[in-house]
Image (tube, rainbow, N blue to C red; front, side, top):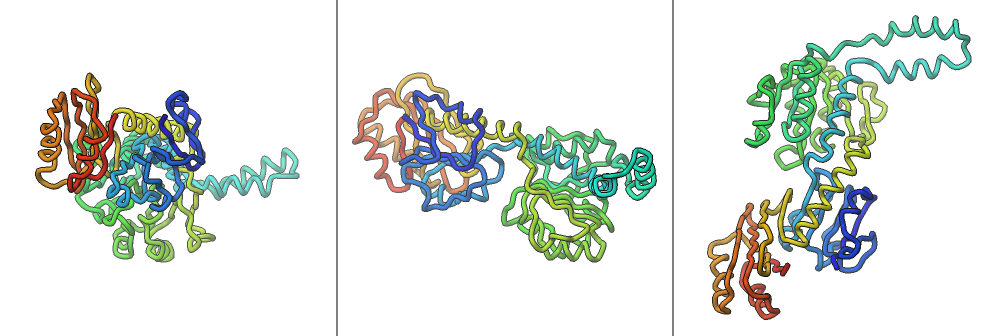
Length: 389
């Protein structure tokens, strides 16, 4: 029986992926094999020694101590792309809000309309609408920073809306590049994109290289009066820098999914209460994806969409399976195979992959592994965690 501990409210459709006859899933459970969460901040001391995997039902993993997990041989999964459409749609809404004062117009009617006769209301509407004209998205230039699962969808939608679309992503993968339309103009640096864009939208994770990406230096590169949209991560934008940009009118508006105290009350800021991935569909998609990944790992040792381990999979055929992680140093696999050879254990299939300082291996053997064998493997210097499946 596998045990999965949940934090936050996880979509029922995701939890239903765990068969009741082989899984116990609960918010309070002792010695879980895996943890499944959304935004809960997980601390190293909260992770039981029995935990083998952590699944984040979303894209970002800033709330998970990834480095600590890696050192302990714990695989951290996320759900890239599962919430992409939800964030894309909110980005489109943000663009529309930035070009037409829809919120102001609604507030005007709500505040001035009640109690008026039909004739008075009609006159109010016709006279009042002149204050809320706005402009269209068509023909404007959209700058998309980050062209992954979400950014690429936003860029494609911009093209569909008749916008000129610029893209910048220094870490763009070959796979992501193939997905992009040829009509998206790739920029070589942020400054060039900012200087040409009427609307700039951010779709990046927070890494050391992207923290405070929008800083005081880059603010000066914005096209005067441009709109900045941040639906990705709070820490991508330096608060002091955006305030400087807004007050100097270098930046015309800032729409963010991450309200901060310093920006409350600013008339050029549209704060959104972290709605990016808060649709029913996105929560379901994320939960289902992570549940499937946790199951495949716990039952077969396969890894898909991990942020700290290599993606690796070996189809189950015959024999018995051993999966182990180790420090990515020379001759580790030779040492393991020597332990198996010394015990006349035949290897049927095997696969080995590495990622940065960690390596992971799946080995199918002909005979059932004994406790003594597992202990011998665990004693090898550099081996982190060994499992039998």
